[in-house]
Amino acid sequence: MEKKTKVSLSGIQPSGKITLGNYLGSIKNWVDIQDSDAFDNRYCIADLHSITVWQDPESLRDQTYQLFAQLLAAGLDPEKCILFVQSHNPSHPKLSWILSCFTMFGELSRMTQFKDKSQRHSDNVNAGLFTYPVLMAADILIYDADIVPVGEDQRQHVELARDIAIRFNNRFPGSFVVPEAYIPKEGAKIMSLQDPSRKMSKSDSNDNAYILVMDSPDDILRKFKRAVTDSDSRVIVSEDKPGVTNLIHIYSAVTGKSLAEVEAEFEGKGYGVFKPAVAEAVIELLRPLREKSLELLRDKAYLDDVMAIGAEKARAITEAKVREIYEKVGFVLSKAK
Ligand code: TYM
Image 1 (cartoon, rainbow, N blue to C red):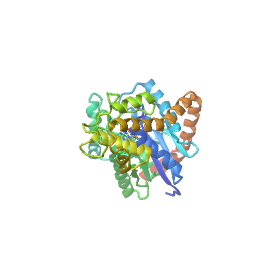
Image 2 (cartoon, protein in one colour):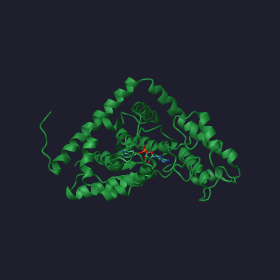
Image 3 (cartoon, rainbow, N blue to C red):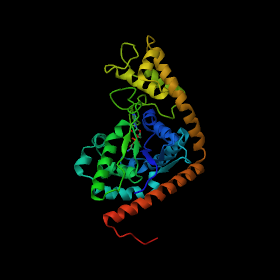
Image 4 (spheres, protein in one colour):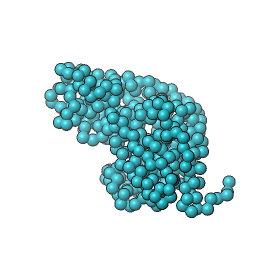
């Protein structure tokens, strides 16, 4: 296995609209890593993952275009990274099958997201929901990714991908790079604005709990003003002030200021000043992204073209990798065209 540059790979599901949590926990870092020029970058819209819970087909298709436009608007540049839709590259499920034979039932049973989702979707605890982390491992290992920029909630899945890579390499040395989760210092776990003990999630039934990347400035301001805080009005990071602590983390991730700098900025000012300031910072962060993605969405043909370019580049890398792995496990390589 020869590789010149280090690889960064990640993915995001098109199931629903993307939140400020998704943006700060992952997409923002993808763009920063891409712009640092230190890595080869591969990012995918993980539509295969999305159907582990029920999806309306038309909404899924629509959300895939929306997310693709948002990723471009956020600054992912198809000249600098391979941006593609997972289902456009059949190598992922091919490798996933092989890796599933190197993954233990017990390991998958321990995945907290599986436990959580199988409770929330108790009428549809399908095999895909269970084996989803194997597909995610295939997404990562097939590109020989060195780093996987994700939020805190995906750490366990990246750990599993590492374990699978190590196990496979023990049997077939040098097959995969063992990846590492790359988790941002600020923004890795943005919490709900209504219940700061839970992560901000698009599947929350209360839409005041999350900020969407496409929310209007008025909605963003209203949601931050309504954000749950605590009775005293000091702007400090504290375990018994989870609501305001979450807002401080958001402000820090958006502005790049340290937690101590944020505390100093709002010392003696109270929530009446702090909450609108957080809202304003988020509005300005998301404004260009929102405007640009609305513009891009008017030209579906362009989005289709960019998707096709990404798929071709992705396939060119992974088809060779799948052949290499097929050969290692003992399959006869087909001569069929
Ligand atoms: P997904 O679609 O649930 O989330 C996409 C990314 O957003 C991060 N994230 C958050 N970060 C901070 N605070 C939050 N409240 C928050 N909510 C979500 C997630 O950690 C993630 O980085 N299985 C993955 C998608 C995937 C993938 C991959 C990731 C598919 N293949 C290969 C990495 C590598 C998922 O469902 O993410």
